[in-house]
Length: 341
Ligand code: ADP
Ligand code: TRP
Image (tube, rainbow, N blue to C red; front, side, top):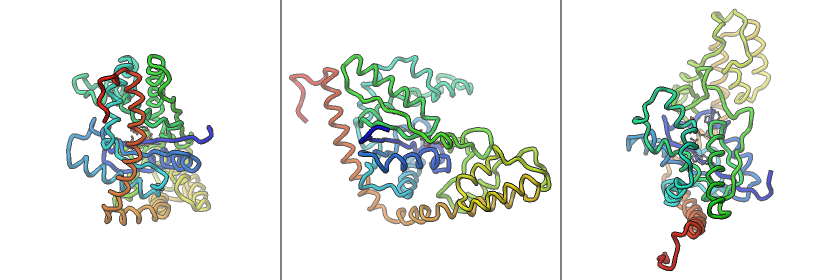
C-alpha cells in the first residue's frame, strides 16, 4: 500500500436502486477499510451513468434519493469523505468528451458492459451510446481526482484497467497528466453469489437481499433463496459448501456458534431450510439495525442531506476544476484568446 494514498469510488443508481449485501461486502467494506488511513477520500453517486438504463424521471429521483440515504446510513464520515453527485460536477462530462478522442474504439468494444449485451442477442441499434461509452465516463470520473486506489467489486476491475489504458494514451500523447489508479478489492467477497445460486448478486437481476427495505420484503428475498438443490426433504443430508444461504450466514451472522450448529444439523438432515433462513433474517436485521435506523432518521431530514452534498460538491469542484485547467492547457484549448473565468 502506498503512503498518503487517496481513494475514490462511485455507485450507480440503476436497477431497483436498492442496496444489497453484495454491494455491502463488495464495496462498502473495502471502502471503509481503505478510507481509515487514506489522505483523501471521494465517494459519489454516478447518476449520469444510470441514464444508460433508467428512462423515467420518477425512477431516477427515487433511486438517487435511496442511494444517498443508504450510503450515508453506513456511517460515511462526511467531514473526511468528499460526498457528491456526478451530475453536479460538469467536469466529468467535459473530460469524457476529451478522453473520447484518445480512446480506441476496439478497447471499448472489448468491455463487458457492451460485449455482454451483444452476446445476449441485443442488436447494435438497441445499445445506446451512453452504455457504449460508459467506461470512458468512468475513466473521467476517476482521472479528475488523481486517486491511487479504486475500491470496487470484481465486475468493475476491467473498467479500472481501461481507465489506466486511457490515462496512459493521454499521457503518452500530451505528457504526464494523469495518475494511473489501481483496482482494490477484498478477494473473498469481490463477487458475492446471488440468491439464484448461479450469477453474481445484482440489483438488475433481482437475485439480491436488500439491506434497507422493510422486513417483509427482505424475508421474501431470503425465503426465495436457492439452497442445496439436491436436498428435497429436511431429513435429507444437505451440502453446506457453496450453498448461498451458508455463504451469507458466514458473512452476516455474528453468532458463530449458531452458524456451526446449523451447518452441522444441515449436513445430518436435522434442520429445515425455513429455520436456516429465519435465522439469517434475524442475523441480518441485527447486524444492520443501527444503519436501518439511521436511514429512517436521515430520510426525515432533507436539509442535513443537502448540506452534506453542498459541502462535498464544493470540495470536489475545486479539485476537478484544478485538473481541468491542466488538461485544457495540455490539449491546447487554452491559448492567448482564452477567457479568464
Ligand atoms: P449492481 O450490480 O447490483 O447493480 P452496482 O453496479 O451498483 O451493483 O455496484 C456497486 C458496487 O458494488 C460496485 O463496486 C460493484 O462492483 C459492487 N458489487 C455489486 N454487486 C456485487 C456482488 N455481487 N459482489 C461483490 N460486489 C458487488
Ligand atoms: N461503474 C460503477 C458500477 O456500476 C460505478 C462507477 C461509476 C464507478 N464511476 C466510477 C466506480 C468510478 C468507481 C470509480 O458500480
